[in-house]
Image 1 (tube, rainbow, N blue to C red):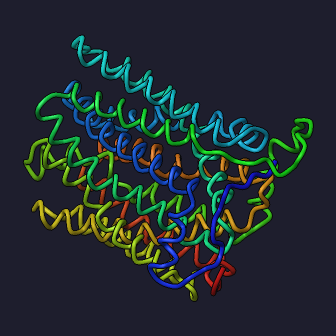
Image 2: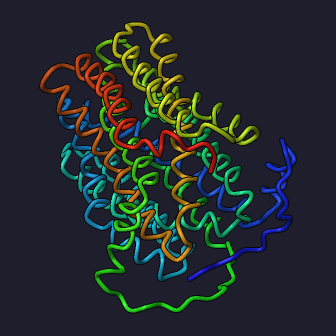
Amino acid sequence: MTHSADRGAASEEPGSGAATAIFQQRGFRQYWLSQLCAIFAAQMQSVAIGWQVYEMTQRPLDLGFVGLAQFLPVCVLALVAGQVADRYDRSRVLLGCLALQMLCAVALLSLTLVGNTQVALIFGVLGLTGAARAFEFPASASLLPNLVPAEQFVRAAALTSSARQSASIIGPALGGLLYAVSPGIVYGSCVALLLVAALQIAVIRLRVVGGDRKAVTWESVVAGVAFIRGHPVVLGAISLDLFAVLLGGTTALLPIFARDILHVGPWGLGLLRSAPAVGALGMAAFLAYRPIRSNMGTTLFLTVAVFGLATIGFALSEHLWLSMGMLVVLGASDMVSVVIRRVVVQVSTPDEMRGRVSAVESVFIGASNELGEFESGVTAAWFGVVPAALIGGIGTLMIVGVWSWLFPHLRRVNAL
């Protein structure tokens, strides 16, 4: 089905005026604030869980299991989640996902207050969180194009990413600071933030424009997979991001870098977790006011290569501020990839299929993030934390070379 919101002015204006015009649209403003609060909570919670799990077990592999516990539900439920996002009110689906994540934060708070020492219970709660996020991403990603006019979507995507990155800057730093006071304060704050996020989505009002719910068939379930396979530019953009972040991601290893290599406490971990978001926020703000208008394919490959080089620089650093600098560069380069990929996928996909295509995309993203954390944990357990990060950075550079050969159409994309 297709939805529309009260969109206000639809004209595309240059510079800051266009960005301000988007915020005058009530539905987008509520969506943006919800994303800000939800990601803020997720980042604070991630810092607390990473430090808590490593403190409980002292095993790098368990940090990998933190990512795996959240990825497996996304992988298993992706096709179902896509059908749900395309057949039901996306704002209501998103509301349910946020409510479940809030209950998971309540569970983590309860486990902390009772002095839980069983890491398996934490993994169980993370599994439920992963299930909620399996439905959240396709509903959220496919909802955004219904809230703004098509000509404003590139700016809307960049502004939404800037909200995410703003939360990713403050969230980890504040989470690490509060964790040093009490883990319970971190989880309690996450509960409050997720409640605010859910309330913002609850008051979004969309008008149903049309579209009948067709019978569910196997062809309709796997339509998102078929669509991506049939569009090399979309497949190349998504898979490049997948393998680059899968190999080059160092997020899961940050607690080890903070504690054993850089010798800083939870506050230092919070700074490290915030650093990529500082770079990403700066780049998102730049792209919101100066969208990429040409040489998009070449820009995509170059920025992924910079991502790999920054990962190598971080692996070799033994100083906090140099490490943070490398992570800032890493985050800025990754943001370009995120914006280009998101716009390619959403603009190229018919509205009635956006949920299913976004669900498949969520598996790729989950694989690059959560499964990437598992991969990092495994390689760190096998080779050590610094060699694991080095291998990831070098692997990312190799992926750029191979993908530029496999997907020449993506490399030659000039404008969307």
